[in-house]
Image 1 (tube, rainbow, N blue to C red):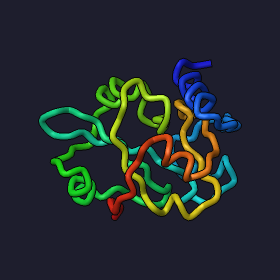
Image 2: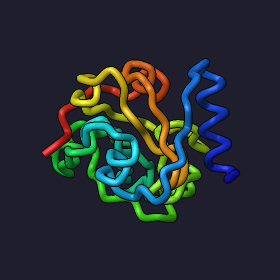
Image 3: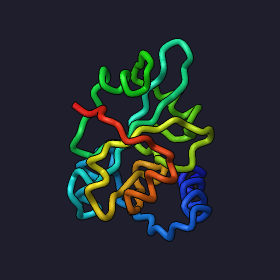
Image 4: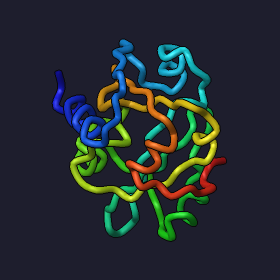
Length: 155
């Protein structure tokens, strides 16, 4: 079992969430993850990472699978100029590789924002630290655990 997957399992256990992590083969896209989970595309919580220009701080935007993060709106929400984070910055801050970034179990705390569309479902699915693993969770639990602030940042 990968270190990344173990960190996600530990974060869920520490929070008292009895989530069943599902191995799905390769699920690098929200569509692939939705197909594997047998759910609606928007029930996939994508972890999109941006960086604050000048500081390198990474920010997490949790968005519904069918939505796209609008960079200009995200910058307004974050009150900072943003760029898409590169793979090295993502790995350094979160401990995860792009394609498997979990919203939980990061190496360092990360400021997070929440797409309200995710709250419209009873259950959503998120990456469990690898491109091959996802887990179900109640939206309210995930929002609480990430501290994500609801915001309008999608296109």
